[in-house]
Image 1 (cartoon, helix red, strand yellow):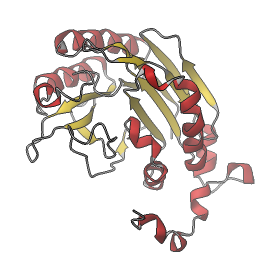
Image 2 (tube, rainbow, N blue to C red):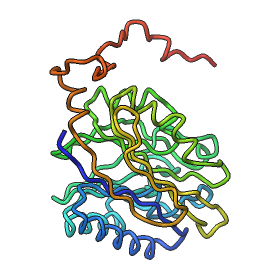
Image 3 (cartoon, rainbow, N blue to C red):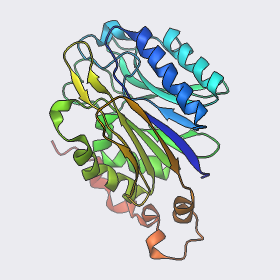
Length: 279
């Protein structure tokens, strides 16, 4: 991995106002481009806004107008953009919670949220793939909100070569102190799997009565906090990810136990019970 500069955004996304949501994102992308960031990540469903009951009506095809807009921004500002959109499904009536990944060279990819909360299952379809993406300087992956509560996902990503995991959220204010909650488990995800975690969240009221608590957080491969912003207002966080430590951990040149890549010492033959149904 090479040194990376990330931009993370906490923003208010209004349901039914995709045009203004995209215009706001454009301004954030411009700031990230001027800061020479390699990536900018927006929250879960930042384009369309997060709403379960209106999901079918809000859903868009990919490629489509919004994805083309984001792709043009990526090309114009020479930055990789990750952002959320309700994606219309060709196979199912229920759409996907999708994170779009647009590259400056015109390529784009998708990650579809694989683990849906109980309140999401009636309205969305789950994705069924855990892709890792290449970006020259680093390999990266995406876990959306509820996905992060399943440690197996982070482990699979790390075993497949991911060095940075982006974790866009749509966490409501009602859940409580987001920083305290994230640190309970996301530091462990980063530490156990020797990855960087880059976390962002929607903030403010979405126009239909739901309010989100915001929060931006970057965690290093030893569980250390690299950068954070819990100012409770829209904004962008620029963070540099140093490469020395993760390279020592991931490469066989390490000379100290403190730089162990724990996943190398797994014993998969003992873990069969993980895939049993205990219901």
